[in-house]
Length: 330
Image 1 (cartoon, helix red, strand yellow):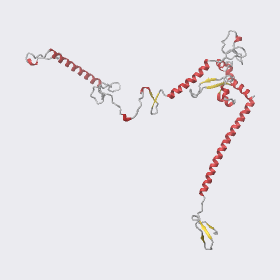
Image 2 (image 1 turned 180 degrees about the vertical axis):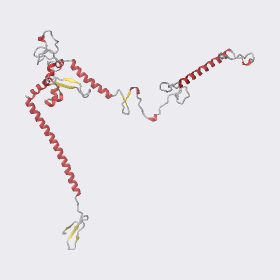
Image 3 (image 1 turned 45 degrees about the vertical axis):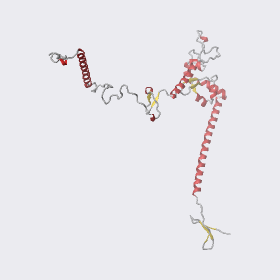
């Protein structure tokens, strides 16, 4: 089989009026090639839309803007942007790319002022703790060495634990609490080297805020608040230092116990007094309410004009309860 020819027959010899010029023949050939290209594109799109994918679905295709489909874009090239109606009032233009879904039915922006304040507070707490770690206090002990000295090759010049004499000093206690204690003694002697919170110092040892803030008297360690990072840093104190200061303030442990019992009794007394006052006010309000109800429930006689009964005595009778009294007119 031979491929059919697409050339036009030359009929210029038979009909001179249908003779085509070279330019006309060239234009006809170009139009024919364009038509064949459009036909091939339509056939390819038809075949692609009929082919099923792995999910037995037809593949999605983008609808061209010049398509006559109802789902095609209604905006035509060169058309002007629609103007907003001013009668709709004010509106806010949000950048949806910078928003997150809060799962609460509305969108919340990431860069809220509240979040910035919380982050600033958290950075402030971290800065306080970093300043304590980077700026250790230097304090000279009776053994003639300070906290900033490095370890010497001479064993007699190195700091030693007060309890066992070990050179394995806990550097955190040494830097913050100015206390020379090894890790072993710190873990074994909990009743001496354990840490107390500020609340425990105030409630158990009856110390004030001004005394606890004085780092020269009672050094403390700053630690992140376990409840929330934006809360104030937790202040921890060494137990033996707190006890020494409390014994010095109150005189002795027995005096501290006496003061604690006195304050507890006074606090309990104030609480009972407040309860009794509230109870008395409640009774007073209840009594006044009952008295007022009884007063309102009392019957007031409204007597009629004076009349004379069968015995010739002047009497007055209540209009509601028929109560009668004798009267004398002068």
